[in-house]
Image (cartoon, rainbow, N blue to C red; front, side, top):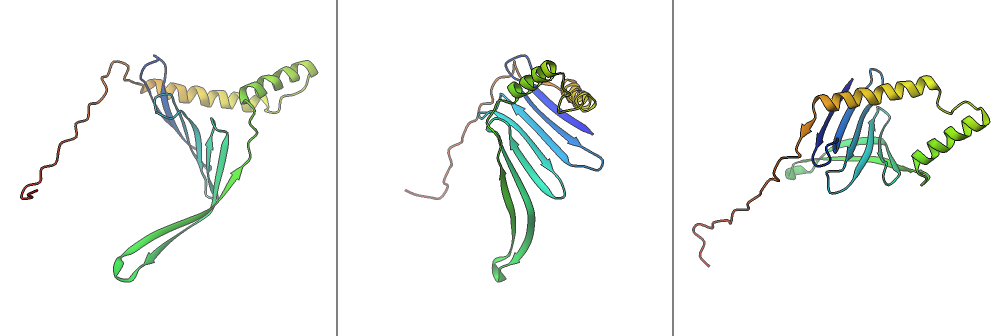
Length: 164
């Protein structure tokens, strides 16, 4: 199941996109890419029964949250609080440029007549998924390129009955 949304703000292309992918027997995956937000975002989040994985593709970090336990705590007259703890593992990611590595591997395969690390059938599946996400985004693309920025007014508080 693919549910994807995007918007164009200034480039004429998709400037912000979020795709949620659900697999019948597998994880729930959220992929986000944005040029609109103050902070560039290129992330993939995967939720499984065993772990929650956060990957930041710009900073090349992966965090694995495992063994999450939740507990309700009763603090007598002060009410009930909820506490959640997990073990967080930081997975080392080499700081190479992925596209460069892919192209380098492709050239090596051609030069040495080797099979690629990713079989063609899997590569075709990945391409089909990318095209499906792209199609879903373009079906619902929101165009904000002509929208005016929202103006926020902060009202001054009135202090009735307060003398100063």
